[in-house]
Amino acid sequence: MAVTRAARICLNGHMISLEYFEVRNKSKFCFRCGDKTITHCENCGAQIRAVFRQEFFPLEHGNVGEMRGYFNPNFCPNCGQAYPWTWRAINSVVEIVQTEVKLSDAEIDQIKTDLTELTKDSPKAKPAALRFKELMKKMGEGTVQSVREIATQVLTEAAKRTIWGA
Image (cartoon, rainbow, N blue to C red):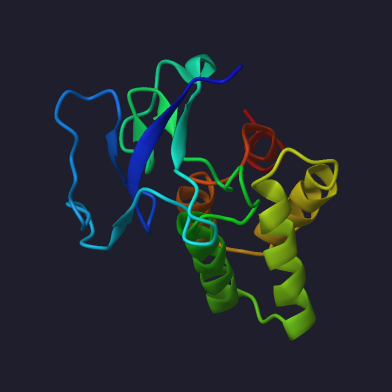
């Protein structure tokens, strides 16, 4: 069973506070980006709960959504909708890809679908990761690095390994 804590997270995915802190930060806006913070799913109202992932210690510093081993969930466990930071990361990656590779509307839709699958532990994630990996080969090193910085905030560990290796 995963350990979770109620969390306040900004719309860009910066974790502001967790319930176990003695003094809970109730900031309505993020101290890192100035965006609005939320504690409940904007779709259904369920409380947002960060997930503890012990297997990732030691942690890399500077990850969006990381606070002492707790990570942002990508989806609401009550209604299944993606949280705002998940969609923002997906849309940002698509924008970056479009700056370097001319894509049709159908290809853009496929990338969005693939990226959404890569945020889930699902059977569709593996073929999506392979397609995305091929797309990355069409881009320059700087673009790939930018995509990686954003995408790693929301992709599953399995997807990251498939696309970028260990």
